[in-house]
Image (tube, rainbow, N blue to C red):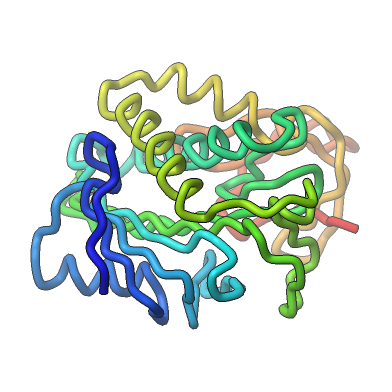
Length: 259
């Protein structure tokens, strides 16, 4: 393990970089069980052997080509009922760094927390919260970003990367520092109760907001609908085209039908 220090306020001020790890999130959770790391401590590795995605899915990442890291946070100021605000802040932090290097009008946040360029996935976020009563006690924020990877071997339907989009290669270390800074700014917005700004920016960045598209419910029923917003508890608000009714969906209760 190598200990690094980024020139930030707190996110990345302590960075523990491992040659390889099964999962940065798992390592961060184990670290929290044994100690109280400084807020903003980052666990990173160029080779994540068993990366985790949402709901038990895996995250493919070629060794040395991408960003795979986890950030330890203590959002104790945030009530459990508002935990999706953390999701918004982190998603926007990743959106911000993508917008610096790639065409901003092609980037979006696919609810709840995938990062897309056009209709292709370039990154994902996995947030695992530890709760204490009605508050969040700690959070482990896992982030995977495809930077220089060209070939994807998994059955993921639509992966892309910085290199596939621009034809250029990028210094992963520099992007990692930039990512820590943009997430830090968004997390400070959250901590300082600038929620209206986060809400506005999240909606602005939302994939296919206000556009009719094909969706599939968990019971395999497909329908045409459009996203109208996201409720306070994180439910996706979708208007059904054939009935005009607005329905609310939790994670995994609905998905886009992508070609």
